[in-house]
Length: 201
Image (cartoon, rainbow, N blue to C red; front, side, top):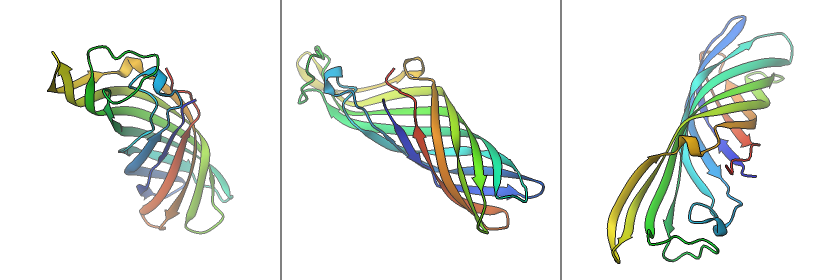
C-alpha cells in the first residue's frame, strides 16, 4: 500500500491553566511512495515529494501525572510534484496515445486532520506525543505544465484539473512527535505522520 510520511516542525502559542490551549502553525515536508510501477501509466511508478503547511489548534487537560490526553484539529495543505517525459519513458502495457506530454505535474491538496494523542511528560520542558489520527481530503487539484505533441509538433501546454473525487478522501495514520515547551507562551516541536491507509484508489 502507499505510505505517506511527513515531518512538520511547528511553532505553538499556548494559554496555560487547568486546560492547555494552543494555536499551531508550521511547514510540513511530504514524501509519497508509489509501488504500482510504470506498467500503470505515466501517473505511477515514481516517488513524489514536496512541501506544505499546517494551521490549527490543540487542547489538553493538564494533570499532575506523567500521562495525559490531547486532541487537535488542523488544516493541512500539501504540495507534491514531479517532472515527466512520456516520449522517453516505456510504460509497459500502457498506450499514451497521441497525447504525449513532457514537463512538470503537481498536486495540491487541502485537508482536515484530527490527531488523538497520548502525551508523556517526564522531563521539564519536553512533551512526547503519540497516537492515531484521521484526515479528510476536502479539495485537490492537479496542474500540468510543459509541452505537448500537437499534429507532430511540440507546443506549450498547461492544464489545471480538480481531482477531489478521484483521490482517497479519508486517511488513517499514526502520529509521533515531540515538543519543547518554554514555560511561557511559545513552544516548538517536530512531528511525523505515517499514513496506514492504502491510497491506490
